[in-house]
Image (cartoon, rainbow, N blue to C red):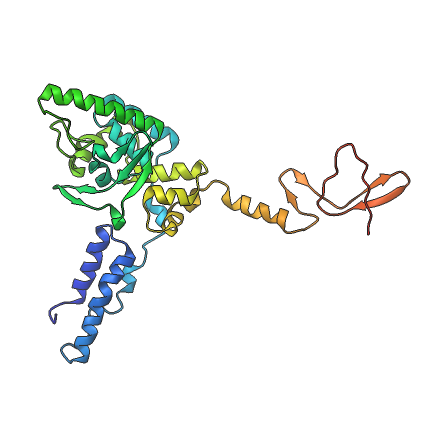
Length: 310
């Protein structure tokens, strides 16, 4: 313990963040380390705590919204068209990524038993990493995500194609992995990106984004279509809705304007406006008398306006 330096602690923090660990998790890792060194200081074994005041290294480097780079609707459609034309074997996986928001490891770890075609959902039970390491999904929670009709039909066609391929190659049965290579083996992310994913951008003439941005595209599209952040949170598997709102909240169309417009209706201001409906204090003539209209109640069509200033 006396050989540990501040650079070692900083390196620990940097490595954990580079692995995609959350800042709250890193804080929980550093806290007992810091407490241990405090105890060593009290015992007289060391003079300074190398884990003290490490919080500045855990501050968010920027707005989380700046780290997402989703496809536009047109880019997504073109990307899928090129993938289907040039890499038909891997088109179903890319479609699944854009229709479910699953991470690469979650896609690679899908088995046929995880699909429920009748009720149209996928049960995300595991994450498969390069080298064959199998873990629970991020946040250690199994979740269900909905399947669109297009995706369900594509995966059913894929299962039929796998059966024919297994027969032709003498496999005996279809591979247990839904998305596999030509040998029926699991896909590794580094190899897939080099052989397939990056080549699609070159053939399509599209700007290059990360595979993880397919997940961001899914979430962005749901919110832009008016779905609730709570539904997006469940589909994405976020540990809290705060994560969903922090990253994607700015994509809810017109949410701020609609919120302040509703204040005009509920604030009981006789001069408030909402959309094209404008209510003003104004005078109208009924017979020989002048009366003033007040309040929000609109006139009933074809009925006389009987109002009183009292």
